[in-house]
Length: 106
Image 1: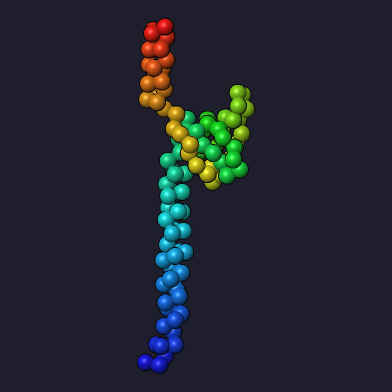
Image 2 (image 1 turned 120 degrees about the horizontal axis):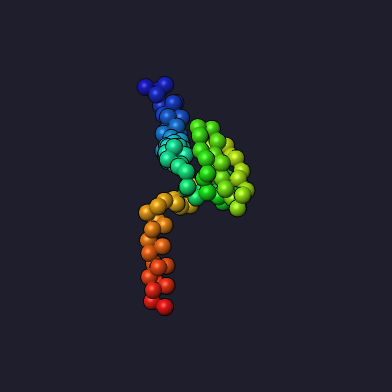
């Protein structure tokens, strides 16, 4: 009984650290890994260093981003911090339709 009472504060401190530090970090790592796994060509991304670009090529280790006209830069896949938007044909079709409607109304 006396031995358990001595280790009880340490056990409580470990439980607090687990729920306040370890578990949230594991959740962040899981969502980041899912984001990195779901990257695809045409996604607009932001790197850890703040470089904005569109994915031109992607493989298991690296990502090639187009950051300006005829300027492609290769980054490590882990250097991608966030996906700002996904550039797909379904997104560009409504934009083209609205531009066509504006031109017709003139």
